[in-house]
Image (cartoon, rainbow, N blue to C red):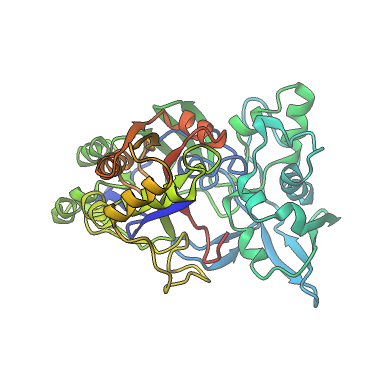
Length: 436
């Protein structure tokens, strides 16, 4: 069961120091370490920010800050009259990056598109199980069933055949999991017996090449000189991994970094007053929620889940954690997503009804539960620990003892994938205005 807590209005809050000097190095104070550098495998913002955006392209991409599609590695595409066949005409002359393990001998072509999708689709593909092979977004869209065939018409033309018409299919190809990897690099690493390098030492067609990574410390990228859209305006991009928002802000003020995401909402008034800081914000397609593991007792009891939901004072959490930048969600879909139902009614704050439900469920003397809190900030939750502590206090009022648990971000995600949590703070970033 999922209990919605809030939708964060400040989905992307970036800060930059104003400067008249054209810097050759841009330092970005990121909020956490990536799990690896393949956005097919991981959906966390820290992973896709460090991989999908700087290193890779997709057949189509969204214009920055919008849900408007634009051609990328595919210059154009045709759709059959029955809506089941999509033919993509690929951009020619697109170069792949290189690293110390591999130098490409050819440009991007249809083989790379087929490799990138068949790795995710085909359980028998030699790369399907590499790096633990979990393709959450591909599977959530049921692409394995939807795509019945991917054919190479020629080096610069790829044909996707679908099981049925799917109106948002092209938009879905703008998601980060649809990033295009090098088939030639993959084949080379497979022959060398080191296929995991494809995911940890990435090669893409994007504007930046990965040069160095020190976990929990720093990621160094350099501009790819042969990028098909032209060399980036900065020579070096540095991710300074800084989980604490207060420290990120301090670094920003000292110009130790020039951009930071996800400031503490309480700091926003002070930031707006600083003429040297350019504060950018935009309503996002994000929803934060509290997830219950219905396979673990006592959360397998619907009355327990309802009681815990009724015991949470969501307006107080929105005020204390989001400082006016969030709104209460009525369901898992944010208002900007197609099919979101504005008329749905969420659970009211009703501790007495919660106590009655717990009694009906057989927990007259209370119960104990683990509550996992994310160790990093996300667009949908600027302070998961504070939120968890407030939920802990609310539940204590109805006789439920909650133990707040957290782990290092990578370990947290690994344990969540293995369904070890009972209750946890979580959220969704929607890539476009369609539901998953």
